Length: 215
Image 1 (tube, helix red, strand yellow):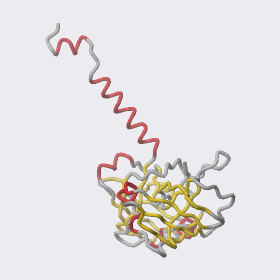
Image 2 (tube, rainbow, N blue to C red; image 1 turned 30 degrees about the vertical axis):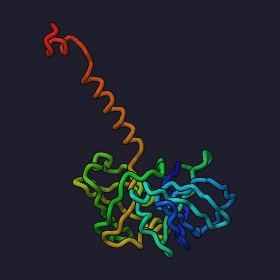
Image 3 (cartoon, rainbow, N blue to C red; image 1 turned 90 degrees about the vertical axis):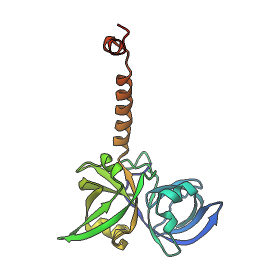
Image 4 (cartoon, rainbow, N blue to C red; image 1 turned 60 degrees about the vertical axis):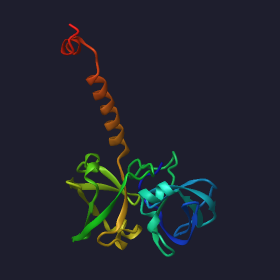
């Protein structure tokens, strides 16, 4: 589990095809204190398992499924990625609850300066519109952000200077592919509501019996 508060960036120093997947070697821009083999690290918002790890370097395997659903398949030596180590129970939840499981990819439509801020607009498949609400949370390449506006397969976010300086956002250009994870709470609510609606629609009562000729 993660928060979407990026701890720093990393540079892809090597990659190797492995059984239809990919092995990434990444050098972090910060010290990986108390490294633990097998720990979870979010790379551009994707939860990966560190198969090797030292003070600032780790490797991770990326499955074919992950490659097909994220932008990690587009990485190459020298690519810069956002990094966040897994949440500890003692940590502050400064962003929002992020699982590291990507829902879809989106693409950058434009970025416009607005004073000291920059407004980024993204396009996503329209079927995912239901997971976005104004002033709600969304994770873009692992970064916890607040939705400014949304609808018709487009949404926007405002980026403060600190976030721009600490992440890969300034490196994006129009049509750049980004990983999108929607708020997990909204997805759970949708699941619960759909189950209730299904149960309600199949409940056998006097109206159901009358409609089907039993009474």
